Every structure is written in structure tokens, then in C-alpha cells.
Image (cartoon, rainbow over all chains, first blue to last red; front, side, top):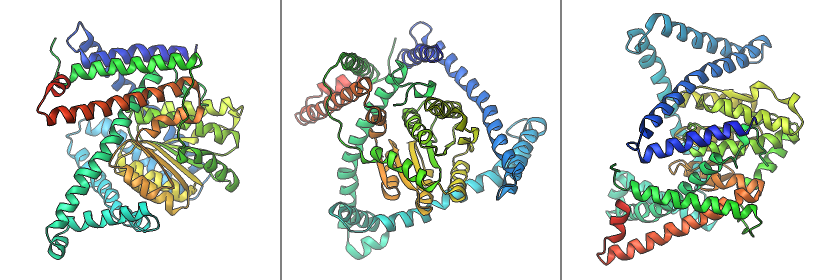
Length: 211
Length: 257
């Protein structure tokens, strides 16, 4: 019963949402879909509380046991609860100047910093991958060199316009056809997975057998 | 009732395809002879990865990606999480599942908890095995890399929807020496996983994982339907190319309805 009830609820609501996407003006399907979407948002909002409890439990345990780097956990809890109190009792709206300062001067630059660090990881991953140890990796290496040379002015300057044409051919013909093949397969797989979950064949998330 | 262009044909295709999936599930249940699935090294390597962690006394890191429940990749990731968690429970190995999307957290926790209960190791389940990191993409990536550096898991399984953080997490996994199995259907991230991980699952392979790992006839039936769908798509592409080259727009008009 513990497994069947969530599956029945999932099936009914899943079908309503799918039909609501295709036939929003048929009867009250559109209204139903909108209502279910709103309920989903509410459920997500409640789940934030669960996440906060999880974070608090894990980091409080680290602080209690004084495990290595526990001061990071203290700082995390101060920031999390401090910002919550500031947002709820003082800022109140996202347009508040203090809240805007936190977002624009702290969160956005920190996210940009982490994002920028990807460039170094691209370098190290490329260094490991671009080794001509087999036919496949040699093709990858040659294709990558052509595409990279075409992307910088120096490539055209040194090798002429053909490098751009070769790069465009690799990207538009070879790459696109391969990617579309993957995309068609992935879309069909996604529909089959969704259907397996809707009809209750795939039920590991509600405690069903995973093997 | 007015549908937007292409929606009617999409709905017809969806109904036909879902019908085919359900018929094949029914036939598979009644003992239909199922074809062999080609070997997917990435999925075969999951047992090896968990075994490595057991020998080394380290944990297994798992991430179901950063997408929400409205993305089938997350659901595929959770199905594989169930399998990995059961293997970890069986061999008394810790699992650390990191979560970015908060609505995924209760499902992931339930999946891991149930896996330990099914293996008769309910007492070994710890709440910190499933960790909500942050709802922010790069804060999540930072949190995961911190866990990688600090806890040095022996294996890292990344299966689900990943965006720009994919390479960051995979490269750090590679730096700390974890055996890495990664898979996504996000086209832009597949090359990163191929470059940085030991095994990569490409596109549809993440959706086939559940059937591949369990070999359950009902889930295997859906794989046959997927192959039928692919053949139908190939047929439509070939016929469409020929008709379009001949200046006949019948198929194009039909698909635009």
C-alpha cells in the first residue's frame, strides 16, 4: 500500500499534466494543469525546509565532533540562518537594497569565480584526452585542432580560409548528425522512462526493488 | 480547440509510442523472447567501482545531476542510485549522495534508505549519506568538489542532467583518483564526461541503465519499444529527405500539423 498509493497519485496527476500540455482549452484541463503546477511549487517550497534541516544536522554534527575544517560549517550555518533572518524580517522584498547588495556583490561574483575556473579544467581534461594513442583518439585530436584553429584569427592567418570551411563541415555535418542521433535516442528513452514511472514499473524512489 | 504547429503530430506519435511500450511490457510479462542488450561498459563498471571502494575503505559519491523532477534524466539517475546504494549496503560501503535540487532530496533519501532496508542493513543508513548542498548551481559544484577533496571517495557516479558544473566535478574526481562513471543526455556536457571520466554513458544509455542492471523482463520490454521508435524515426528521416528532395512537402506538412 505504501508503494501503490504514490504510484496511483503519480499516474493520475501525470496524465492530467500531459493532457493539459496538449489540450489546455479542453474542458478544465488547462486549469487543472495550472493548479498542479502551483501545488508542485508549494511542495518544492516545503522541501526547502527539509533541506535546511539536513544541512543543519550534517554541519552541527561536524561542529560537535570538531572534525577537520569545522569552522567552515560554523560559517555556513551563520550565513544560512543570518540571511534567512535578514530576508524575512528586514529586507522582506527582493528589491531591497541590502538584499540586492548580497546578491550582486557577494553571490554573483562568487558564482562567476567558480564558473571561470572551468577554463583551467578544460585545459587539463583536453591535455589528457588529446593523445593520439588509437585511431579514435587521433580522429578526435585532428578534429579538435582544426576546430580550435578555425576559432582563432591566427588559424586563418596561417592556413587560409579552408580551415574555417573544414571546421564548419566538421561542426555542421559530422557533429550535428551525431548529436541529433543521440538526441532522438535520448528523447525516446526519456519518454519510456517517464512511462515506466507513471505505470509503476520503475519504483525504486518509493521503496520498490531496484534490482 | 486550436493546437500549436506540430503539436497534433507530436501527440499522435506520443500515443502510438506509449501504446507500443505498454504492449511490449505486456508481452514481455507473458514471456516474449527478448533480444540481447549490447554491453555497456560503464554500467558493468558500477560493481567494480563499489568493490574498489570496499577494498579501499572509502565511500562512493553519487550525484543525480542538478535538474529537477520534471527532467527524466533525474529519474533515470535515481533509478541507478537505488542500484548503487544496494550494492554499497551489501558490501558495507558508505555512499555520499549530493543533491542540488531540493525537491529531489526526499526522493534520493528514500531511495538510499530503502536500499539499505532491502539489504537488511537499516542500521547502517545514516542521514548524512544524502546531502543537500545548495540550490545554486556553482555553490553546489563548490560543495561537491569540497567533499571530493576532503573525503576522497574511491568512486564517483554522476548520472543525470548536468550543465556547466559537469567538468568541474568530473575533473576534481579525476584529480583525487576516483574511478568515475558519468552519464547525461545533455549534448553539450557529453564531451566533458568522455574527456574526464573513466566510463561515459551517452544519451539513451542512462535510460536503459535500469533495464540493463536489473534484466527485469518488463523494463527490458521498454528497450525494445525504444528501438522500434528509433527505427520509425530513421524511416521518417529517410522518407522525409527523399520526398523533400523531390519537392513533395506531404510529410513536412503532416508533421507540422
